[in-house]
Image (cartoon, rainbow, N blue to C red):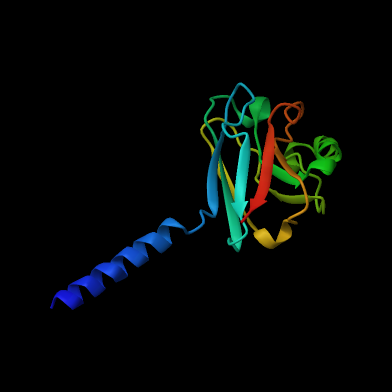
Length: 151
């Protein structure tokens, strides 16, 4: 009887410890009316097959005035992606259609709105440097952070 109890306790302990080590394959990030993200960096575990970013606009201004999106690209491509996004305009969420340099992006949202994007982690290279940013005109210079692939 005692053996069965000990075995059950061991199984429960093992199950709870393995879930404690499970990778979190999603994150929520907020943008506000002061052109700020609430997270300067995001870490993505290599053990994730997919990663989801939920963007929440916690401000009050409409997307036409203070819209935000979340765009991920290699750091070296950020300026060009942002410039091409401005040319694409709001109807394209300030992201050039079919831009292969863009790993993932949300739509542009306004105050009180949210959107999410899920992308395969296999799109990320371990040796590459990534930056996430808002491509709304004028925002990318300050509304940005780093995304890093980790073990």
